[in-house]
Amino acid sequence: MSDSSAERIKCLIIGSGPAGYTAAIYAARANMAPVLYTGKEPGGQLTITNDVENYPGYPDGIMGPQMMEDFKNQALRFGTDIRYEMIEKVDFTGPVHKIWSETGHEIHADAVIISTGASARWLGLESEQRLMSKGVSACAVCDGFFFRGQEVAIVGAGDTAAEEATYLAKLCKKVHLLVRRDEMRASKIMQERVFKTPNLEVHWNTVTEEILGTDEVEGVRIANTVTGEKEILNVTGFFVAIGHKPNTDLFEGWITMDDNKYIKTVSGRTFTNIEGVFASGDAQDHIYRQAVTAAGSGCMAALDAERYLSEKGII
Image 1 (cartoon, rainbow, N blue to C red):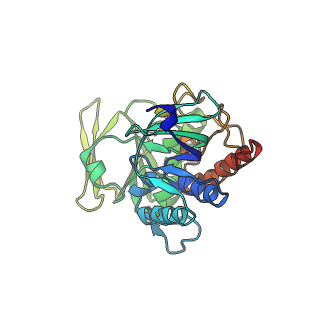
Image 2 (tube, rainbow, N blue to C red; image 1 turned 90 degrees about the vertical axis):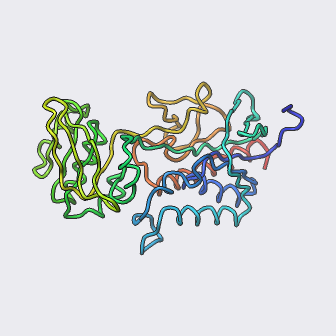
Image 3 (cartoon, rainbow, N blue to C red; image 1 turned 45 degrees about the vertical axis):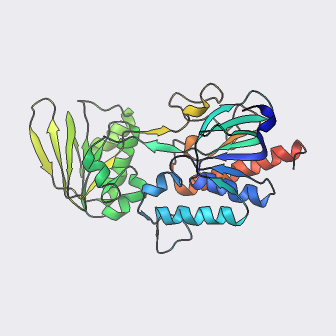
């Protein structure tokens, strides 16, 4: 499509989790007429989260998909143009940013807010997908509370797994940490915390064969990769902590990222290395990864974008 037929807009938001929708609410209220492309998972990671109990303003808790519907409706109320489509290509060469959707529609945007989120890495078991949000989780901080006084298992060997395992040990009767090799990748200080926690048992050289249960987690079958011995752990919760992958492939070659492909932003702000392109939510946050922090950074991105457009005399 030629430049002359491209759609010209002030503000494009890519992604539709808490960060994207919050950015849209603020941008729409600032007369930036935002256009938001949802991507393939409208609502992001929260659409696979059953109970959200730690988001302020919902004293009785709320289902993740319903919460994202609320966010979306609030963005629509202020005039956000929401499109259920993917962005396929970007060109951030000039001051006007060029973007193409999966249908080939070309957009020229003065400001771009990236809110593409991150996806949890999973083991790839059928039982894991089937019991997702029914005892299987990729976030101990989000869901550990539901397993108070119970026995749980967690898979992983890095700092995140060690941190989440020790967090769960404060809530749960017993925690089984399943480590595939005979050592952990976690830092020495995190490993020491694991070994010092009395109700935390490490299973070395261990793989998960199957998560047991029909409607909820009732146990997990594990196997020792050295001896071949199999065992069933009677757990009611199963946590996966083998990392997250930020959804940032689209911006490679344009936006500066760290070694794990998280977008680098200026400390305390949402600026990227490209003028007029801002990043918010889990695409640039590998530390907190909470709905409330994602929403907060979406607000920051919209405010940063609004100041940028004002300084340029565009709004």
